[in-house]
Amino acid sequence: MQGLSYPLLAVVLDRRGAAEAFIGLNTAMMPLGMILAAPFAAPLMQQIGARALAAISISGAVVGLMLIGAISNPWAWMPLRLLLGFWLACLFVVSDTWIIELATEHARGRVLGFYSMLQSVGFAVGPALLLLVGTRGWAPFLAGAACGLLSLVPLLGVRGELPRSAVEGDPGVSTLAFVSTAPILLAGIAAAALADQVAMSMLPIFTLRHGLDVNASNFTLVVMIAGTIGFQLPVGWLADHMPGRALYLTCAVWTAVTAALLPIAVRAPLYLWLLVFLWGGAYFAIYTLSLVRLGERFKGSALATGNAAFAAMWGLGGLVGTPLAGGAMQLWGPIGLPITVAAIFVLLAAAVVISARW
Figure 1 (tube, helix red, strand yellow):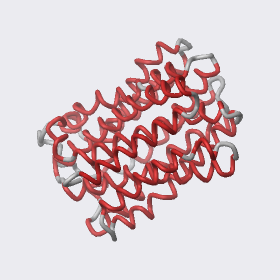
Figure 2: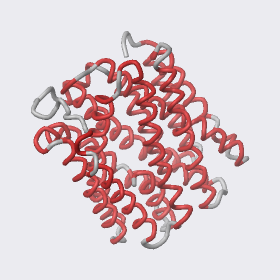
Figure 3: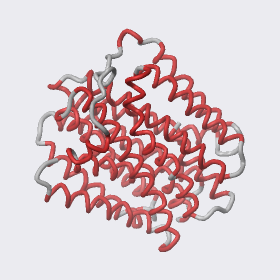
């Protein structure tokens, strides 16, 4: 649903003549909802249970997406996209906490790499569906809602297999108090979110401005997400066998370099698709490696709080990134997108180098 909504709504707004900055602002409502959800996710897990919160979150997201499809005023989409982000953030906190609790220590990197890979598969299904059903009418909204409803089926069938999270019945610590304990991990999550949400919402606009048609633009996004899928298991294996800090730094530098090369590669679609494949794999690996490190350092209620902080930083990265990239593209043209992403990951790499811990 998230992978479908970003390019779908960006293309719809662009078709209606909206400026890049407004597209970015409209898109930023979803990550703002994720930020607002972070302080509530762990308490909600405590009060109603993780499984119930996951089911409610999926249902709320489905309703929000259908309402966006029913309303033509893009200003009215903004509160709905905020609610969509709220429910998706709660779902991320629940699922991230579950999978880290289930992962054994000796294979944590591979388990979390596989989990990240499945998330990327879900993201890829969204724009891939747009290639099949198009971006006009009710079809794309119905397709996204169907994916959400189908995901309830396995959730309802695994009641006895889900761990009882340590946060249930344990007040733990606040999300704000967690921030000072893992600043590099949180910065990495924000940077990965910036790259992900800028790509989801603005990469189609970047390619359209360079003369690609809508189908080629959506295919570019699919190829990029294919990179996020293909890289996570190898990165997870590496995380189990080599120093995590060095791998983290490598992925940050790799993301900066591949983003910087986008204006050159866009002249030839085959080179562009190869580059965005490498780009997607590198930036999403930052998310995977952050989850691995979170599981190494924190347990119990602190783990759930850390995942809530991750959700907030994911939202913050998207909230800052999409208006920033949209404004940069409006100011400097399409090159504003790669400039924004490359600069952020250069700063992240520098922070990893000079930080005493990560």
